Amino acid sequence: MIYLDYAATTPVYSEIRKKIPDLLDRYNFNPSALYSAGVQTREALGNARRQLAFYLNVSPNNIIFTSSATEAANMVFKGLNYKSANKILLSNLEHKSVIESAESASELGAEAIYIKHHREELKFEDIRPFIDENVRICSVMLVNNETGAVNQLEKLAYEIKSYSKDILVFADIVQGFGKIPVNLENIDFASISGHKLGSMKGAGCLYVKKPEIIKPLIVGGGQEFGLRSGTENVVAVLTLIQALKTTAKLYEENGEHLKKLKKKMVDFCDKMRFHINSPENSVDYIFNFSTGKLSSEVLINHLSSKEIYVSAASACAKGGVSRVLKNMGYSDGIAATALRVSLHPDVKEEDIDKLIHEIRWASENLVL
Image (cartoon, rainbow, N blue to C red; front, side):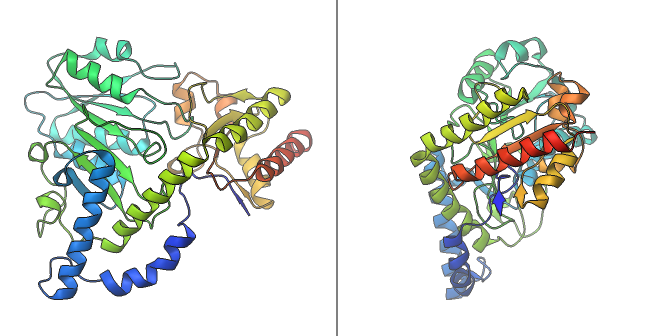
């Protein structure tokens, strides 16, 4: 099997899988319990929170563990008060979980305003015309999950805050966290997904600079500083921390390897005259292109028959034509023939060679 869909999920690292039985034996208790096993579990959770906070250079009190990045986005957009300012500014290229969360806040009186831009990255000049006294929050993603385009998050957040300190900034940092640098100095909220890093499913995180400004989405026992009730999934959280350590080390040590893999794909696409959808500033581990003649579904099915796994768009798109590419201004022909290859340091050059071989064969033999 050749797995090339790491932007959808990173399979749990083997060293983590081996540790899970022991983690379940030691920490499969309610961290709110007063007996020793519960106390030990609570201490492990607190230690995980401190490690994540240290990595992000924030206070542990600003780390809220969730089930996913989707839940984190919902907590923000559904937890804010929109009485004094009700506009939500966001790019039309954001992840669906962010867009749907923002749209759902209409029940609270919020209005989602979309910033349309076709360029490789969002710039403050795109945002500025939409800013007025009614803007409550602006959402900026770090790395686009389909094209790998990188926004200058730190610069954008600084420019937004300099223009109006009252505007909150939310950042979806899912596809960049642990892989490229991120500075949360001017960020009010940030969402993180564990399984994108190689942890168990069911572990995510919300960074919140001022916890008092949002109301909890889930109420009950008051866990996670009262912002996310429900017994914490401690074992999954512990695998998130281990996955972060492993991921950060691998991506730091294998930058040149990933560049080489991406260049191999770029050279192949140029030779085949395929359309490259990923901009020049994209990360080296997400590459998007379109054949222009072979539907994404046909090509993915062929590759799957050879046990090569890639995707057409976000895993959340469920087989549909890429909304992101359409919003970038690309034609139906480009969007309907797109392929996303997302890499990991464990991917070998021969894996890419096999992928290229099968795409070339399909392009020459499966086009009607």
